[in-house]
Image (cartoon, rainbow, N blue to C red; front, side, top):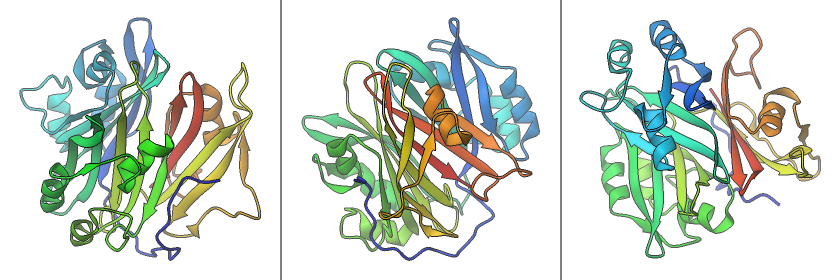
Amino acid sequence: MSHALFINDVASTETAERTFVEVAEVWVPEGDRLVWSSGNYGALEAFQSASEKQSFAKGEGLPGKAWSETRPVVLKGFDGSYFLRTDAARAAGLTSAVAVPIFAGAKLKAVLVVLCADDEVRTGAIEVWSEENGLLMLDDGYYGAAKQFEWVSKHTHFPRGQGLPGGVWAASAPMLMRDLGAGYRFIRAESAGQAGLTTGLGLPIAVPGGKTFVMTLLSARGTPIARRFELWKARGAGPDGAKDALLTDGICQRDGPLWDDEKEKTVDAWQGPIGQVLGSGIPLVKHDTAAPSAGYPAMVALPLYRDTAVSHVVAWYY
């Protein structure tokens, strides 16, 4: 049974040229350093070239900091910071980034980094919530032009089971929410509606030591984080990993709701991009205009772990 929530089933038909996230990239450990694995840079070829040549020691740069601190890290400005590609990022118009470490138990599998560009139009949210004294509090977040929503978020907390972050915490599973501005289940609905936020994806981020982190990606109609979201639940876990994954929920601007209780949709390990992530346990960023995934040129597929096994694969397309 899906843990995702839908407020309604009406798919948006709007499209947008701009997206909230400009760059997505994956870094994987090789020896004592993180090296480039995959990424989508759009037209930012110079930044891509600089990134593919880069590597990070533990504690070095943004990916290395997420590794050493074993937690998601939000960096809202590069100048004067520990970010190592500041000049290339400035030339590309990039202004902020979020790094998410992916751990299988105590072992680092990868670090996902997303980078954004500030302007007066781009609206959305990438939030990191952490548990303090039995409540989820905002650890940090990036909101683009959604300043009022940012203020509300800083003054909001969630008990287990309440709102999108609290629901993810209680279920220990990813969740989707739709129509954030009108949904009674989304605690910040009024300010979300004013900011144009429509779709929310919540992810439990497992880290060594058991501290609770939940990451939320809140997508706006005008500058969406993605145009399609999918949640896959791993099944048949064994010594060689999960056998397959079941699509438990999904929404798409073009196709509407993606799940069908009467007709299961599954993917085998190593079958296509989702199966590759399921089999390898490594995030994947794919960009291919000649062979688009689900009709979209770019996608991010992220494994979520429970202890040392992949429990879910979450994908978003844009």
